[in-house]
Amino acid sequence: MKFSYGLPAELLVTKHKSGARSRRGCRRFATAAEAIRFVVEDFPPISTLGAWMQVGNERFDVTDIHRLYESDDYPLRRRTR
Image (cartoon, rainbow, N blue to C red; front, side, top):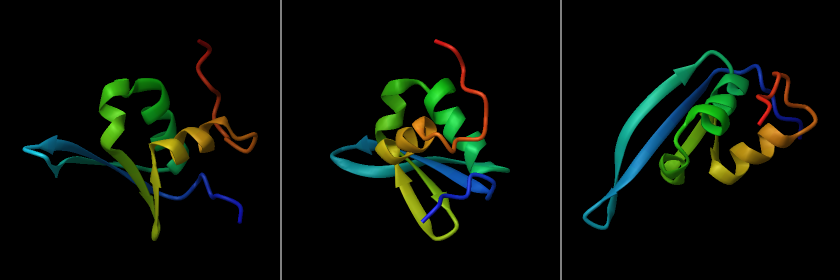
């Protein structure tokens, strides 16, 4: 199945607190492509450990997000490193 980078997305970040995960924050993006770029290019790496993205009824963890970013289908220009 082909991923739709143009759909709206929510990025949710959790953190460990006393051994249990607690929700830390939610950020909405107009497109999944923008959410993916934010995680890969702008988000502090240590914070991505508990991050996941919701697009429609599907959830994507950090590994999935990086895979989508590296895909040939990714529609946005990547930051040069």
